[in-house]
Length: 101
Length: 452
Image (cartoon, rainbow over the protein chains, first blue to last red):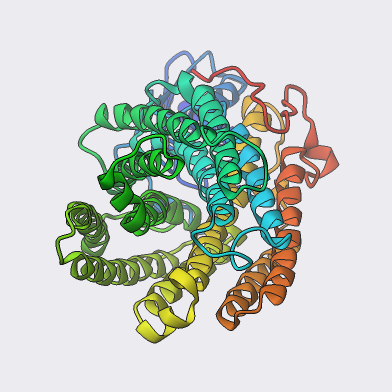
């Protein structure tokens, strides 16, 4: 995969993740700034680093599984791995400016 | 493991708590307990415990089983005991209330039910405190909200121990001059530990996590927040120090209680300052109904505390400042409880129903499980009725009080119906209600497998 293909897949993954909403806020995880990083490696291997709005939230497992499922279904993805982190902790300042609460 | 699990039995705790709230208000509407009889009458004691244990403590216990793991990002230690605690608390309460009925002489029941109820309740609360303490101890160092819970659990143990001692003394199961003195002088301490320490400090602590979470405000541990905790800890220490003074008939308890009351006022003002700070720093422009209704409860807490510190008002509030205690219990604690239940029931129902299909199918938001406009009217009605009932107690009008409680009860029943509608997904748009794989939850019994 060249860099352009990787970038295209990265964008496709981010776009696909817009269907996953944070149930409490009702906005998608990308615009909320919960997806910290999407890394694409050769062969369609994708690593997603994400967080949740609150550490210890009971929705954490569901959100992580939802992200994992979504990424697997993106055409071109051969392997997907989702890593959860709280470094740095999420803050409301990380939300996209376009979000109107 | 980053996330907490859904607490399997919390909804059962909430359902039992709501039933006891309706029962307690029904008893008042029927003229059972104060102001028809004195505050120390067995009928009033039965009523008080239906509300304090049946409603408020079951609500708090259920909420903590769900939220303590959230506060510390760890699994609950001993979560399997949750149904045992529930059975002990409900069973113990029914025995205790039967004991008070026996004490009142209105039914031919054995007086031994009273201490039996006390002991069963003590074992239930001790088991709950053990579960929470073991969970918190495994997560040290604790953040501020969890430290509040630790303080509240300590106060719960003190409350339950005093209560059991009262049940032994009142029933005559144990005869001792020291116990007689405790029964005569210690009721205020029992109430301060229970309503102030266990229920209020724990609620305040959990709100330090829930308010910024629901308002999308930065969650920072401020000096004022720590001062709230220290004020609460000192106030509880002062209340505890009164116990030996009262038992040994040594002067000074009044001064300690006055100091504790002043510390409580400082605590309430600082807590109000922090809550307003969260509100002002929020990213969510339109605060949801649960927050707006909680802020009303907080304003009532400030008002009740201030009025309690004014001797003429306290004197006008009836026997043992009953009108102000009523305002505190139904305006602050119950108002906050109903407000947060409104959100928590919808949130937990969403997780149970739609969590498993998130990312696989379009799902509703948590907000889609409730109808805020309708509930807003009900909360307004509830608070207005509490205010009117409080004023009628100040005015000494038992008839007007019962009429106001009827309105309060009607608003409560309607709010509980809103919780039921949230559980049944009644407000969810039909197109989103039942995607393939979604779970239709039972009303109050657990149906779901524990999450990994």
